[in-house]
Image (tube, rainbow, N blue to C red; front, side):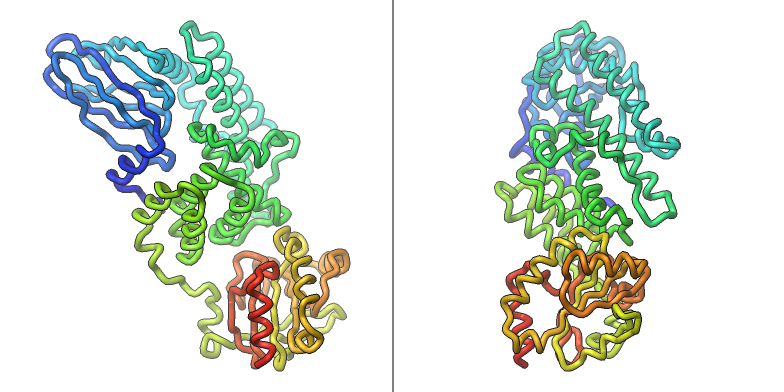
Length: 481
């Protein structure tokens, strides 16, 4: 499901940071109608149209262009597309009143650019598009074939620009070369995404590191590249791919889990406009797939970024009802058992025997659900060690730090415990996302933390992480009861 932005909101909001371009023209012959202009899609895929006054065969309008792309002109029942570059200062058109679909003269610094883009569209048809990349990814048997095809298109479009007879502005030429490079990189991620989505194996399709070594967080934080639609799509794919990498490329169980972990990655590594674009686009695209509480968390994080008013308003107006909604219960199983607060699970201990969570009643239990292949899980273990060092001996006796892994093999599980030096009580619930513990507690992403009081009742099904300074006071309060 895609949430669409209201027309008035797009127009008023984007004028805050859109570039101004003068769109003007001369209509020869019987010019007796106004001209209608449909604007190119903005960063979030929305467009709008505006009527421009024609007087004595002339029209001129300063327009705010939020993103480069094709504008559609409509006059006397005929349409014509013209490319408009966001940083062009002027584009001048000329056509006969009854022949908008005939010869069209172009001038101004935006005119040469539009002429070049028109020739590019004619030469490459649909190849230089994200849709074509999606189709190629479905048909490609391996990433080498995909990479070669995309690299060839990239080189060909750059060559077309360099051999164009017109005089293209140097800033445009630089931006276009980057645009073509992002098309090439995007092809690799599209291959990974399509093959991951259609494969039955539990691991995602990796991209050879050598092919994407030029992509770094520093490059993804280049706000000036956001005008490129390929950069915007690449940014979204890059973040999600990095989230998968943190889990040793194990597939997430659902979109909600993927969005949650991608959000964690994005807020730690993105900044400025790229971060604001990522948050806004993700919320608009994924609102129907995630819990309202996660949307609110992302919205609140967005609001705290600098100069976020435009994006915050887009989100608030577009997702008003969803942001106010209550969560479907995250841990569904908790709804079904013992007044929502009591639940039990049996796991295997390190000595091969089994024990139940209920066996630990009498102590406060801080449950950490993890796996050896989970990067974010590993990152929290040092914080857990520091947390334990701050607790007194009496408090440590009253609190059980329980670690339940969802690894599939005992050997890998035990090796990770030893290598990472995880101190506490350990259990194994085999099966990954299909394990008993994930089913019992409605777990769709890890690490997941829960807190049980001394009576074995869940007091927090989504407890703070060990690195969260609030956690120690919560545990101390429960331990003293």
